[in-house]
Amino acid sequence: MTKGKFITLEGGEGAGKSTQTKLLADFLRRKGLKVIETREVGGSPSAEAIRDLWLAQKDKYWDPLTELLLIMAARREHLVKTVFPALSEGAWVVCDRFADSTRAYQGIGLGLGLEPVENVYKLIAPDFEPDLTLLLDLPVETGLARMESRGGMDDRYQQQLVDFHKKLREAFLSLAQKFPVRFRTIDASGDAPGIAASIERAVAERFFAQESPQ
Ligand code: TMP
Image (cartoon, rainbow, N blue to C red; front, side, top):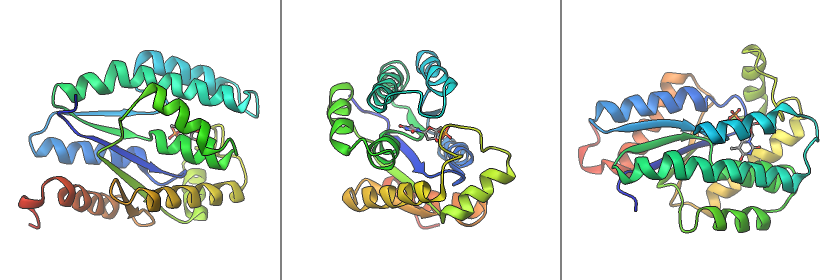
């Protein structure tokens, strides 16, 4: 099915994923590629509706397995309505969070375990994984301070403890170790242009090896 490429950006809070998603999409467009920017949880009207339902109730409202199923239902909608059609038309899809966030948050951080996450994922997206996953890694304190300065501490997990975010960081790093071919870990502790340059290097190495270095 795949003709385009699927690139995901992952990491904890305050890593700058949304900014970097846009900058990476611009970089790819400058290369003459057709590019779609999207995000999870969400990325299609139906998936955004599930996101609203999910986030409308905070603080342990959902049973953890129900929460996993909601996120995976949104993912299925996003894949079928947005991602797969774009890829089959040859577009490159840059996605702010994807299944590794579910592995890290629901699977490890919130203690559901990786097995149910992988089982449901296999059902909704058999044999499908990103072509490249960029893990934006930074110390937890730096990420949380960035979120605070943006006044953005308002969603489901951001108010939770530093320990939880440390667990998430370790979870993402262990996923990067487990899937070394798919993952590239990017130091996200610097400023946005520096992070963008590292991302562009990683993407160029992976997909445009003949064209780099400049
Ligand atoms: P965002 O801040 O990147 O928009 O994500 C909103 C929250 O959703 C964030 O705290 C991470 C969380 N999340 C999960 O818990 N599981 C998932 O699978 C995804 C994609 C996000």
